[in-house]
Length: 109
Length: 236
Image (cartoon, rainbow over all chains, first blue to last red; front, top):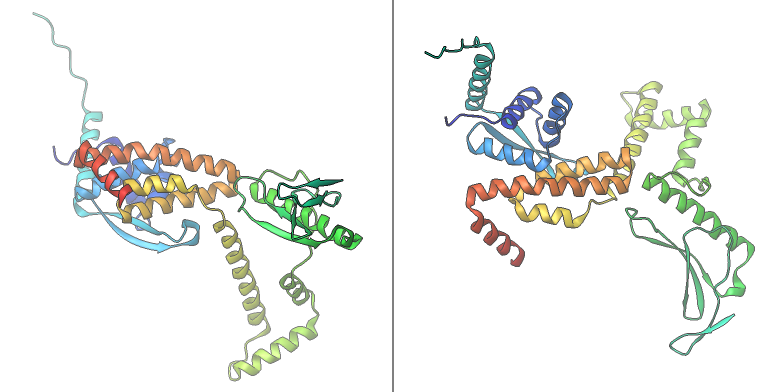
């Protein structure tokens, strides 16, 4: 399916939905680390963000430059309507799998 | 004791001043120069000339001055490095700004009345209250202190080679955002873990980042195209 999301992509999009409108690299990776205790490198975060933006799930905009960042601008990410729909669908699939009753073992004839 | 230099010039040993960590001596144009130099990785490479003259011109006052400043600079450097003080902390001479601020804050009501009166004259019709004026002065001092502390942090730069490596692999807009994020983390780590550890963490983060970036690029462009692009960037 074209709208399939990996675990990292799901986590990323959930983090962005929580942090919006101030979701940028450090904030996203900090949020994921705080909640899941898994640490991703900034490069991995940006690679996933790039991928999601390329698929039209995210939109980016430039923010303010601060001295703490060496005068470089932040790049904020927002979920697009398409991204929200894809995330909802992806989570629904997991929910469905979680709630599905165990299938009775078929007897050998 | 005197030594002969390779140039044939005869030079006597440099003067000795007790209790001067980080002090170096140079002989130039027949005179000795006492210079304090930063010696720990991560501290901005800098030198401060503390004294210059002939050996017999070095009096007690100059010796005291050199020792006092060496200890003060060393303490500051160790403070920056986050390693704790090895040498005794020396209270540096207060700057003019600190003296003025202290005087303002300690001053009695007469001085405040004078300041308030002059401000009221400027505002004329509005006549700000004393509390308002005090709050403004406190805000200005706090903003100034914050700007100074930010400037101090900004003086330590992250490893250039690691920055270059990242910039080589990404588009300029993305690279700027990613390097900004790395620098933000770097500055946060300086405050919590010290410069040396912050630099190590920066390198580790940069190296961990290269794999996913390269992989994403290779999937997008193909391996040959990635190598060609890197070659083009390094040679342009």
